[in-house]
Length: 249
Image (cartoon, rainbow, N blue to C red; front, side, top):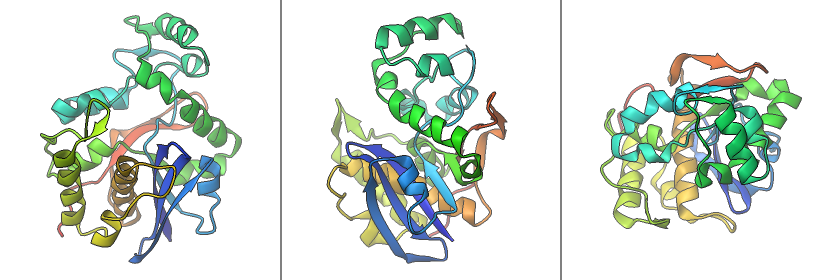
């Protein structure tokens, strides 16, 4: 079976596809749509994507339950977990409208961050695809790179950021590469590979983090927040997945 770790990027999406039974068989691709990755020749049976899946009608507290559960685990890195508002707010294409709808459908009333709003088009893309093609639902798992690195680090949050003021931070990037190498899941040549055109190095790093979760799931591991996953009004899963435990390299 093939699995994939996926992240959004400038070209649309970046995916690292790998044979679950042979890490030396892999490829890195970019695609304009998420559907193109799901329908790639490899037909990945597990797709771990760094993008929210499953949207609430209303929110109570700081976003969806998965986001509320993982923030305390990430400590200094919890700002990377955006508060995703209601489906109606995500469907708004203007920032002011999204803020107004989010405030009206949350308790306590909350607007939308600019960073969160920037990923709404990709959230809408996945949401529309899964609702139109329910056959894809069992194959798609929401992940968060920092939660994957938390698991790879033995259940401890990282003390180095990946970016500083929007620019990749060398020591933080190196720390994450070292954790990927120590996991034993991925070949070192893949971890050190350059991203394809239309994707940045940190996009590739996040896709690789998702790939470790996909591989762990394919081998019977994985853990979800919450456990068991919730469901939204359209039957889409609402959970963020990571590795069950620190792998031994």
